[in-house]
Image (cartoon, rainbow over all chains, first blue to last red; front, side, top):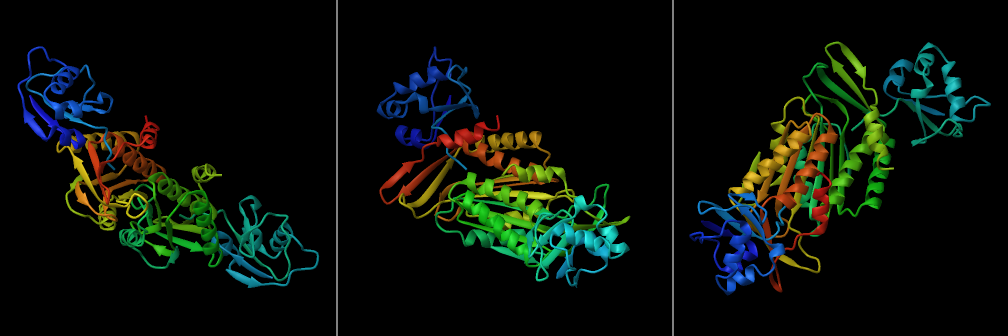
Length: 83
Length: 83
Length: 148
Length: 148
């Protein structure tokens, strides 16, 4: 699975992208967030407030129950502030 | 009194401006319109449909009962269509 | 700022200059450009804008004053062309600047709505069939009335 | 038309070029320019816009498609700056063209409202006190929700 991080999720996790194999049993966006939160202090800090974490799967906004597979690009970022 | 005509009121009356002494007894915008309508065929044609004639006295929009004096500039024109 | 233009002007250049003069507090600039429409079934070949020198500037100044009283604007600009112009040329340009976009956008829309219905300008269209004075549109009156 | 700009751009020049390419049927062009605000008590010294290459363009394309489905537009343009920029520089430029002004004005406002809330961009402000990621504003969400 390709993971991408933006804005303060990127700075807290400490990288903008990484390739990680999707663990067995992780099949939804919520599952990905739970799994990542356990990967270390940076991840935990980034995912501390889940209500302000947004997710895109294959570059489309995705809700927590959205399915994910190992072939997906999953991006995590805060609410957008462009324009 | 200085009279000014714009758009199709100007073309029907045949002039864009004229100086005419205000007749005795004419004291309002409505009075001016009645008086002018009797001055000839061009004026009558221009003032045929009073509901689409707008008036400004001294460059301010004025209703039919607005007072006029011989020192005023009175302008007659159709509804505006700028912008 | 108000300008009655007797020759063609370039909206892009006006917008650039307007933005250049905005204070540091400006966060959003809205603009509207009205063009002489060409082509179509009515086939306008030229448009002549008549105005009432003196009263026109005064009315535009009042409309701008109303906008500044209603919205917190850093600046505003109205340019209105007069005389004869061709399809594709700009008739009117409005720009507004504010700290926040909502004020700039609303004031820009207000200015063009009121310019269309409350400032002394009259349009004469030329088509292959001859000349005709443009009739006021009920939609313009309704648009202007929204701000009352 | 969509453009992600990595260097400063000139809204006036963009508006001029946009108008030049409008068809003969266009009667009104609305535009909005968002600037990096300077000065004030927060004293922003620079702003960095981060985006999600690929998804950002895709989302903007969808937002533009929504605008064209909702209003009769002759054309539209969105330019969004990314990277580090200074006070007074343009962050975003939106332009819309239509036969009639109401469509152009509404679509322009819609586009900027949705760009602010539905396209992946993130603002990092630099001030004398350090850097901070900009928080989303409830007013922006409310503005975007008006069009739902």
